[in-house]
Length: 556
Ligand SMILES: Cc1cc2nc3c(=O)[nH]c(=O)nc-3n(C[C@H](O)[C@H](O)[C@H](O)COP(=O)(O)OP(=O)(O)OC[C@H]3O[C@@H](n4cnc5c(N)ncnc54)[C@H](O)[C@@H]3O)c2cc1C
Image (cartoon, rainbow, N blue to C red; front, side):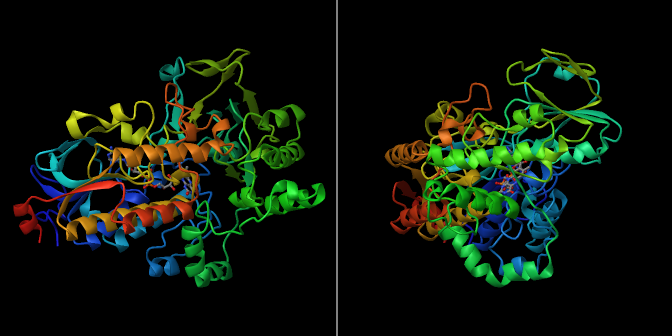
């Protein structure tokens, strides 16, 4: 039974409405959170700034956008009927299909009636007298909630680069993470793509097919492995479906990254040159993210890592005709895998087309954008359209945009000024009943995100149910537990090669952002066990306070 009067199902929340929980964001995390809390009989209001569900897949509509974890695994597991009935068409579904899936889930589980679209959460303030959060949406009235759950996404705050003249550019400007809903036609146009991360790597080969000229501006070359995307046959789908119990169990409990694959039992240097090369070649042919799990020491041993990095550099040199372009495309600034590895369909081969040029801006940078051109130290590149594939203020960007005020009037932004601090990536001391899904300090972006989302949502829902059943008013991370967790996250990261890369895992793509390795690298299975142990021990490291007597009576 709901702890507070039910206000579910209204199109717009009204002044004074009180919810058991407010969820911010209606991507895969927010949708499943709503479903679970509703299953507990709680009243929930979801706010979503977009006008539809799907989060990442609602916003990232750029040409070539698709998932890089195979769809049979990059999908919800909480409903066996759903996973048995949904037909993925390709090994890596394209964005429109993933968005269709998100909409199907919203309809199937009747989620929309509790989601208020086109509404940003601007502010959330914790009231220490009532132990309730007061939430200010961009439209509609302030509401109160016992719990606030941030399902705001790790890659949802598109980063606009600070380039002189950008606002004066006269042609079309697009950000890959904020792509328009109408069709964009580059036929016969001169297009510039700025950035060479995952979104550029996916979009460049597709834009190259229609643009008259495509110029790609690269600061840092990234490692990319062929996706080997293809249509899924019904036999392939069936093979997954019949093995789903084991595939999902393995992904949740045993894997490091939430993906079902062979677990490597040897290091790269345990094999001789020929054998090692044959293994890399076979993973290259297979395609996809499992390239990095061929050996068990690629993330921790630089010499071992070099063997994989050299192999990929060699493959690039074999694909790209022009030696100077191939050299530029060969990453040399970080160990392979220490930035999220990209998965592509003919990215490197796109540079063999006569209409595609790669421009190195590592040393010169972009001086300015002119009304009709991109100017670098060496020359002006005249263009009609500009595509900013400049990524996101990752993991903390969307949280930081909300003015979150906890105990003693202290804001989360003040607390996280030197970098995010959480206990288990789920809560931050001083902010009772405020949960973050896949937040910093959890495996999050290092994993198949849907596996991590489901784990967090289940843990939070179980926790909220536990509190409701025991008449508890608040749960809050203890500072000591948080300090120890932050130290542990850092210690585990420092035992790997990851901190060597200037990656968005480190906040390095955002000027002025503290350099902290944000995700927890201990592995999805191990992390899940830690979270389960904490809750089994009565939420060890969290403080809980009881509801006042009269409220307890109302709640029962
Ligand atoms: C192009 C791209 C491809 C990806 N491919 C993969 C992949 O193959 N595998 C994988 O594991 N992960 C992938 N990811 C990561 C992806 O973000 C996650 O897999 C997953 O979709 C995240 O779901 P979410 O619900 O946590 O966040 P999101 O999908 O980002 O949803 C968050 C939602 O919160 C909303 N929001 C934020 N702030 C507010 C606010 N203040 N008020 C109201 N609403 C707000 C946003 O509008 C957004 O809709 C990819 C990311 C990108 C950008």
